[in-house]
Length: 119
Image (cartoon, rainbow, N blue to C red; front, side, top):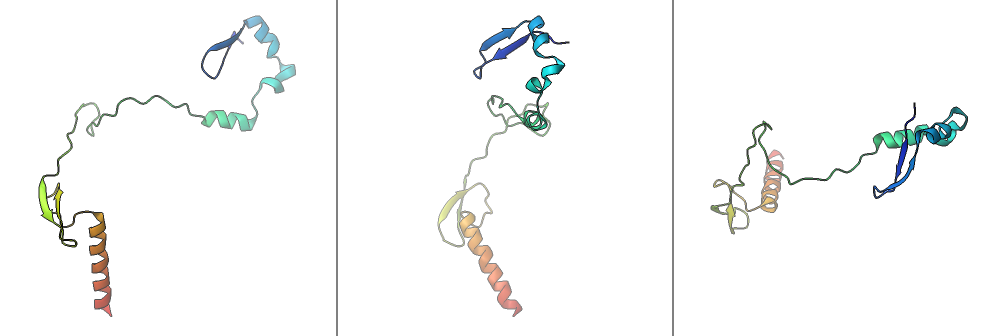
């Protein structure tokens, strides 16, 4: 059974409304190719996702029913980098390097040292 049809524009404004009697005449078996989706079209519309409006992001705990907001820790520990000898403020008091660049330099130096020892 076919009910009345409402046709909307891309903006979501009602463009046309077709009553039930006229819709039954339009969608009969003789002109099925005009109104039935092809397999490719059906596949496209099945996978089509509508973007949902995003709300404000809220960090919560692992148990989502407990609404717990976490505070970001502040970097308060002053360290001296082992590679570049610059003073940096880090979150961890036991940090050895000021950033990923100096940590990479150290990692490569250790790898070269190990490779030289094996020869």
